[in-house]
Length: 171
Image (cartoon, rainbow, N blue to C red; front, side, top):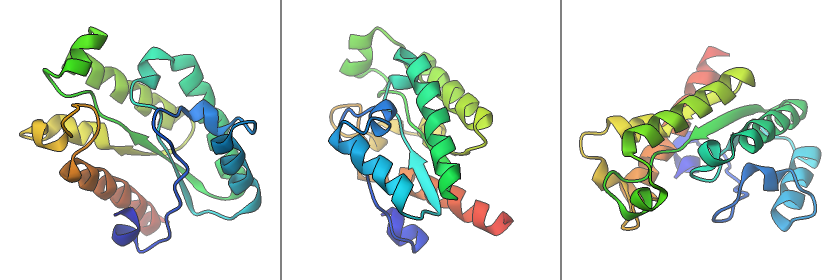
């Protein structure tokens, strides 16, 4: 989706449940791949996304990982983009299981990503904010109330593409 929206090549280094700290660890398959790509290949933009609740439950790791990865990304000559994620679905089982409320999770995620972007001079793709402001956010979630539906995925890709496009136009 993102490649079609930007006209660029998109390479994804991800796995379910991965944290940004794993991208820094060359002893893991994912980390080794990411570290090799940042050291040996040229990129224009690198999009970073923490595991869904990571900025709330492990803020020290989140901020440290963003700082280190942004440094590596800039050393590569690329621009870091933070993909700010969304709160779990309002009224959903996963949100209830964590003992959180929707507004609180949304605001904590938004604040963590805003701070990380500002502190590291990274672009911010505020997908979570778009989810929060959507008239009927239920349609943005998959059945699990955590992951995005097709519409939610499209919104995420459009948000990231818009941020990249605006940055390119401003250069």
